[in-house]
Length: 391
Image (cartoon, rainbow, N blue to C red; front, side, top):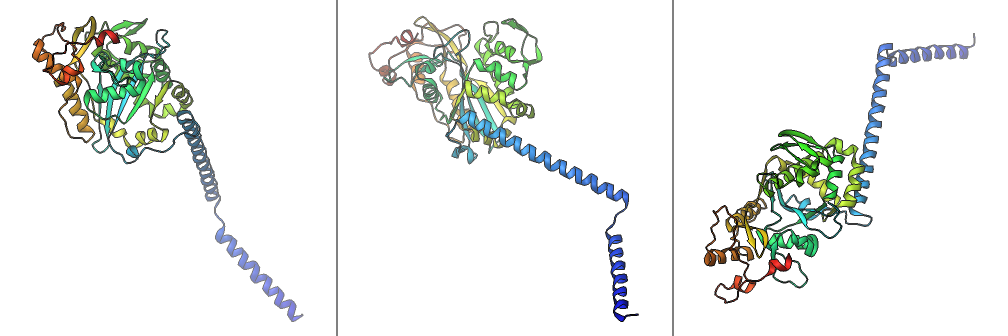
């Protein structure tokens, strides 16, 4: 036999043996093979789920971006929120679109909120819409003592911010202006809200029963608008307003809201005005949500008064100081003794008209003195008719 043929035959046997050994080594039992296939399918499904989830989140992000900020808007996160500093937000509920109104309207709801992520604490202070205040923001910068909610009619959110800042000596960093017509749509978009109804009542063909109750948009509007049948009057309504706002804020961070984000986009685009960018809101949801676990919710208590024929709520200096101290402390600011038009008027009325703050009856002798008198109690100037002008 040819020696070369023997060598080739020997090489084939060795090669076949090596291949067979290698195949046995890498081969797996049938059960193991099935397990590997199942694991691979699971892995592919997981990758697809993550990919679709990221695509959905990106789509939602940019859709919200466009609706809230508009094309070419400011997308950056403000330095204060990016640095997780304490913030204050003035929430204005504007009564446009309600009961057929289409004018500038007034701010039916005024709530000044503060949030301190370092302390994980928040405050929410309602300011009664009839509270006496010097209305700032008028182009002529005139002295005008009247209801605080009229500031919006004078100069929109800017005038409201100036007026409230001066009233309680608290800096306001951001504002959220919500057309009250949007409340129904906002509540419906988050799937309704759960509230604890303080007492049973009916309003605008809606029935409310004492205890926990789920409200849709229409019922939520009726719930916050009823005032005259509330034993606490406007203060009871303010409490119900804070209930709805708090519930909507909680629901807005839920998974259910993500499924309905298209509705929220349309509502924000049409009914909500704010100087918060979308990135600001995203950062607030991520870094400030712990503040809601320690929420101090309250209001500035006023005293009924009839001034120049107008029904007004006059807040005592003690009440204004208490609210100022609470909010300034949560913002990390030192407390300061209030010295503004409201506290000076209170002092003048205490001295000249012997105002009794503990008397439950409405004041009939509280007077609005001119800015000159308010600055100089010794002046001979008399009262102004600023309330009549505003009214």
